[in-house]
Length: 121
Image (cartoon, rainbow, N blue to C red; front, side, top):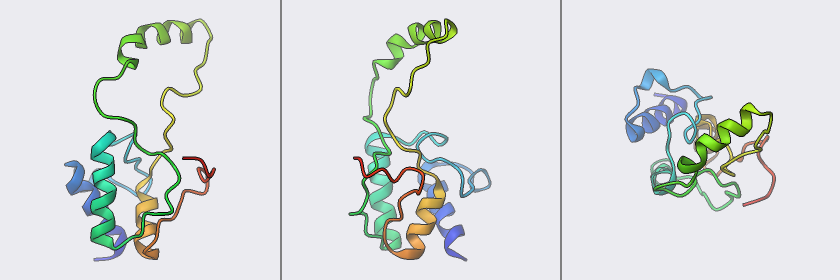
């Protein structure tokens, strides 16, 4: 089994998603809805399994778990959006595609997304 297949199998098993539904471009946090402590745990387990040093991570991929105020103001945001107001982002997290995990597993160190390598936490 090659490393890409191993990482995809790991993500599928961890998230309970069918292996066939996951590709290198699948976003772990946005499409598979991994967030909060579950996201941190996924990265720690990934680090252990594939012996990847995570210390260079400088992006925030996962928000807090639990109830979000956005659920309360979502109708207001929809109305404002319909009136032409555009929100930049409600959640300041970088997308986390499976491809970053694949490249990091190959390199045995964290490989940041080129498009999200802003140097900000």
